[in-house]
Image (cartoon, rainbow, N blue to C red; front, side, top):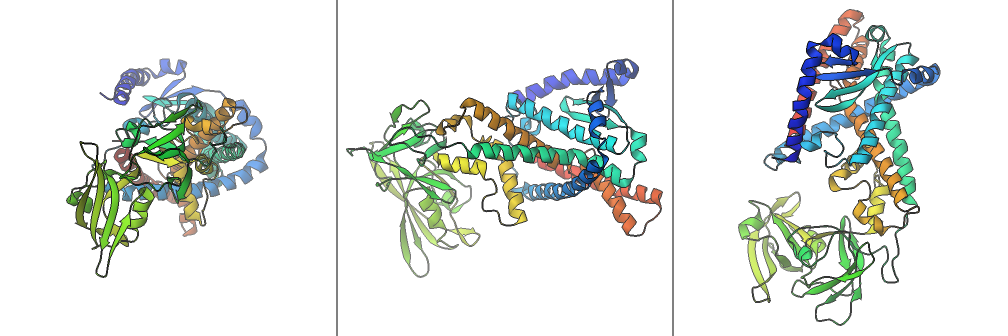
Length: 537
């Protein structure tokens, strides 16, 4: 059984008796500050209430802050709905592809593979505390008493809470209620922005390390490597910086540099790689020791073949190298030599659906010689260009450079030109932990000469995780569904809209807004859980 499921079962076994005891013994449970709240248990305290009173005295400031909070919550509402709708539209393509695992659905540091234990606990604590402090301070700024604060527990800790007095909250104006509900979202967002700015400032001051006269920061580095690939079997490993290359029968190692093509990086040198030859790579790791790979082919290696694709019907197989692609259309025949993954991608942009293609691969035979094999097929369509159905890598590894890695960490909005591109860039940046980015993986921090050494990286990672969890908490709470803050804000927005439409009776308007927002809340929650299930199971 998967460890994640075993842990969940154990947590349920522990939690269920506690919930039943609190439910059956409310008076005894109250002595321990425990209260049943639906399927969860509230652990009530008075922590932070006096601080809320003091900070909430600055009424004018919090009135202005409330307006900003409502505006910001509206923006995040649209971002959240955009994310949800795009994810829902992508569901058909995910059917049968398998999920990332149920552990990713739970924000438990150390249990969720994305959340590191120490940084995750600290950042999650900060995110929950500032969120609830925002609600509490805005409540006090609007003369609404805060009854309690504490932790919401349901199998796992689900978050902190701040409990304004229900009766007093009901009698606040609609504006004041929306200020209270939106405060947590906005405070999380402001903390996230401040953390991000501080992190970017620190990262921008971290130079790429220089190791010797031959090793500098523009070298290609191995970010990931496929197990069982030629690169993996040659002894290369992730985080290696490649410093030289030579043909097996050559005399000297030639210096290398990184060729950058959009998001693709290849090894540049005076050699033009051909999968008909064998090469050795010289590389260094964090200890500074120069190492040498076993001989391997270099070029565009087939990583995977898509089912029912032209490549599949032709009989192409993974772990073979592409040597050339011959394209025949109505007018001509053109032979494209393939030296690396970028050559393959560039070649495919010149093709069209219906083109005849002969794919020549280079394979090492049992006697050690390299043999050429031809495969014929007809390309189908991928947008305006031809489609073959191959995924390729450079000999099984993904390349990057120290400069590219730091640039992606410090400039998430590079090349953004319009509001939608900024939203998409933010979502891409937030997906970093799925790829091991936080923002620079531990395995490659040795590529940089950080002032202060490990202490600098500790500060950078704390700031990153505070940013990541705060912005995620802020965006998710903008979801227009109960019990998220966005559900109550959406109800207030519907109430305001009904008033603009001429419904002056307050009680009728309240019932209509509750009915409309409740129905929409159910639909949104269904969408949310469908997306969540599709991605984790």
